[in-house]
Image 1 (cartoon, rainbow, N blue to C red):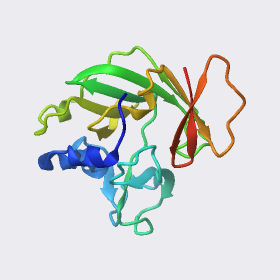
Image 2: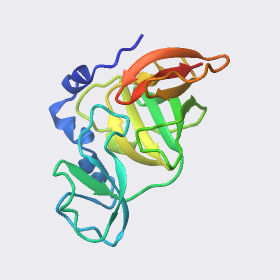
Image 3: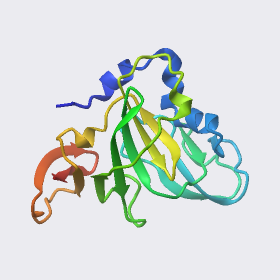
Length: 199
């Protein structure tokens, strides 16, 4: 079974591919409206603010912020980016071929890390052109998309589906929720998550 270790992931990155893990650099190269803390936004609006680097995943510390003009109030390690709408997909590519496509669902009232459900779906997703000239040799590349916009890349598989499951329902807090029929509970603590009901 695939085991997720951020240290192993970090050590696997070719030095010339480090830009991929910098979400600001990735967003800028993709032509998104974005910038580091200290720059001004093109217009007063809501933007996503999040860390430029985050190997821990789960969208932790990402949030929607109203920005009038300057961005000096945020942490220097963060950046701002335009907001994308649409379905959120996590896709595992093996040698540039999509092997696992997972659709995430989350209430708009929840913080960005707090997902309600991840479910395997059948969908044709093309490998991003921007990743076709990487220097390193990576068997697996996980990409996250919102409304067909690439927002995040990892040189690993999706760790939430390493149990051979097709559904992962996160359990938050200390108490395991009422048993879900035809699901089994997996202890998989990470941040505020206790584990998953999987199927």
